Length: 309
Image (cartoon, rainbow, N blue to C red; front, side, top):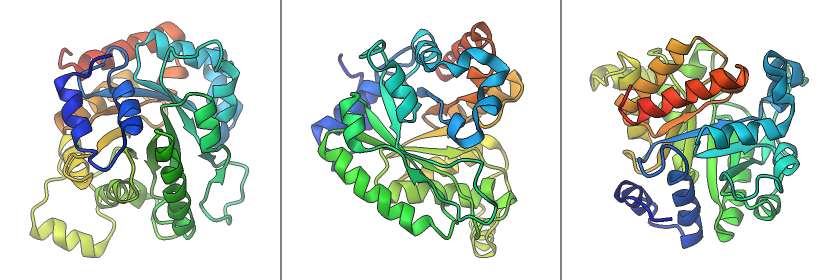
């Protein structure tokens, strides 16, 4: 595998990393239909933990089988497949070496009470990621939660351990908890803050949600107004989050969220492209659709990120 000039430029931004981490980042950036472009589409299937099996897979019952998701990511020519320990183990031998994998090492669930602190349990290890040949570990943090400091400390330690094995780290940075309003979870000032926190914690790839033009923090609003920071449309907000990710020196991808109409999915991708983001990490909007529809959607997303649609 030879890295494209674009990928070499991206890897040059990771000045403190060893050859193993850079090799795994290169592996994902050079994989599939978007290989070499600097753009990525990742299939994440951790929703069984987060929402339960029926809510996640009943709309397309083939998705109850972990092999289905491996094969979907491979056939669509995606950059990587991300999942918790169980699903990755269920297909690790059958699909060995066919798609870069990301082991999601912490998870939450919807059976917790509303009064429980916003946190996630550690459900897998760096040893597991190494044993399964994963390119990266994935870890969720909740900026705004009273448990956030514990989560920050956990990922700093796991990132250090993963990097020592040459394994990259993807941080899902999702604001929620006691300090964040519901509207604030997708507010632009909070989204940019979440991206920046992930970068500060050493994320090699940052995953955040697309944001609205709402500004939650009064002190931040003063700065946004005074500096005339453009948050008027989605592309401008993506650009601002890229800026918050060390001025684009870190790979940043945006989640697809709950299932929505095809046009909305494509419009999101066009905004990510226009704003300079590195791509999409899109789960329910693909695997909850019939396989042929999912492949068609992913094919069009590839075309969008190539500037062809």
